[in-house]
Image (cartoon, rainbow, N blue to C red; front, side, top):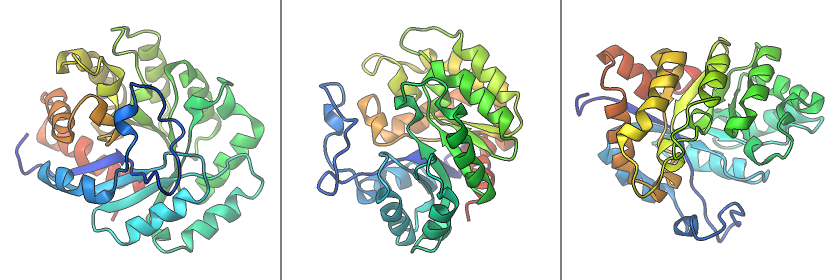
Length: 285
């Protein structure tokens, strides 16, 4: 890949602990994340890596965060899209989404995400109230970023089958067990999801599923190869998962790893993974 390759970072976060706590940042392992991370911190790293646009993704299930993210996007020439949060189980999801669209930066709202990975019910996505909410997301012309543990992939497959009108974007390749060097059943479930035409996958988050101290690109390759083969470059998009990736790698190292993992692709195929898939799926301008 040349240095001129255009890159869209389809997955990153920001947070300000003086505004609200990030209650998922607990324990010694995550301690390096217990500080503020702003767009001003991201921008020089992203620009240095050749990133021309990004998608800012929700971090907590708090209604106020999405309007804040939209306002950030409104004032940014880097953030082209926001994946926000709303209560998918509420009866007024459609009204909530319409109200978000009216806010400053509302035109940057491209998707909705819920922390399904934290739900104790492995079938949470299949609850009638959740499916109703997801239908409202589809009706609003938005996508659903789905962040799940590998054990929750079967329910994701079922939900995608029940809602063919909704595009499901699988965050972090479904969190494969990279550190354990295990492929199955994750690979089988990912292939089942990819068999649904309304699904897309992010090549993101792999470095933090590996051993953060000793990972190599070789450790990541079986998982990257699986999603590349299952989804194809036209349904795969690069994401840094900054600043979470900092637990295992710098921004530049994540980009370099993704470049190496896609080194067998043609120039056109790499362009899809690194930019055009995200632009098409999220409708980025």
